[in-house]
Image (cartoon, rainbow, N blue to C red; front, side):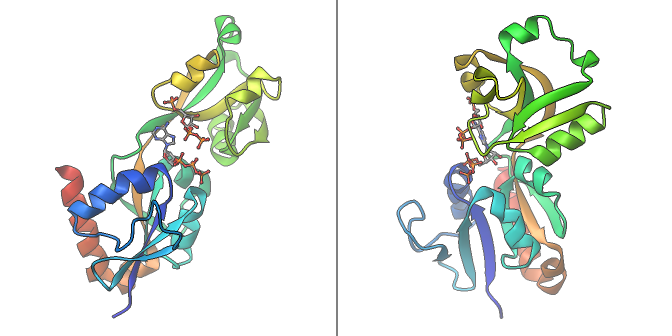
Length: 214
Ligand code: ATP
Ligand code: PRP
């Protein structure tokens, strides 16, 4: 019987997911926060955790290098989700994807009159799709983090970024002007594996479903 691999995004998702996995009986033998190992054995020898960058989780699962994965909906939307099924909303790492701009600009801005925007974001595909659907042209500047800086130094007028408490926007005198999507961590599964390892994967999905509902 082959081993089941679960890909987890390191950082916030790994931290929030470990207690949930433990409740479902899946416990790594080493602490992922301190271990430098990228493949972690668990108490169940037929199950391993694979710790990767958030943006890489869909790729590992899409190509079957991991059977299951846990990743933010933002990352999934940006990836496109090809070859992946998304059986479960884990309800972790909740936030929202928003368009934001400087408070001063917002005072005389009307989103319904937007025709062409210059936007800095980590999510070029989502941003392009969102605005194309509204007939708004976009010039997108791809960044890898700290999007909030872009309008402050004239790199872009607006940003598409994640917002939770709103603290980062407030600290940088930015305001939310349009909602794109509600975000939370999702369980994803490789579509082919779901057929080939159907009973084991469905058992794990059911196990996690139970602890999420609690
Ligand atoms: P990397 O460090 O690999 O660049 P990352 O910075 O996106 O990835 P995290 O900050 O740990 O990694 O975020 C992981 C996921 O958690 C995101 O994809 C998103 O779904 C969610 N998330 C991000 N920021 C917040 C936040 N402030 N509050 C709640 N959830 C968040
Ligand atoms: C995320 C996001 C925002 C911030 C929003 O960044 O990109 O900057 O959280 O949260 P808030 O509304 O509660 O302030 P994170 O802290 O993960 O930093 P990173 O993007 O550099 O990883």
